[in-house]
Image (cartoon, rainbow, N blue to C red; front, side, top):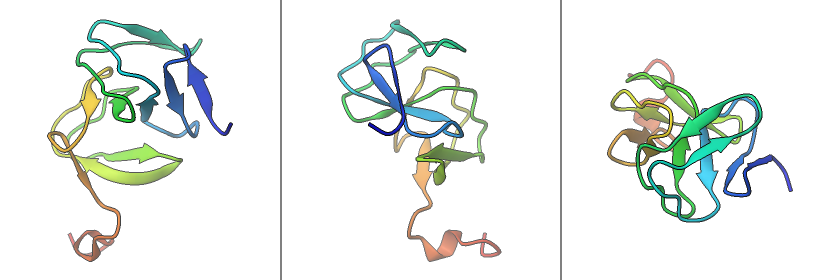
Length: 101
């Protein structure tokens, strides 16, 4: 499998990623460790959804698969669920191409 599994519960696809993907439904308060950092979930994270591994400031790019998948619309603390309430997709959006912001 490509990527690194954290505590058999989440997947980080690339070392540059700022989010991990839940491999099961994760409960608020659960702490996951990849050996370098501990992340305590501040939200429930459904299977297949993302959570922040590090602080992501409003306007920052969000990385998954080693590539930008979106931009934070709010500050996102580590352990927070990353979804449409705090992230907007930039994939396939001509209006988000460099120089068109």
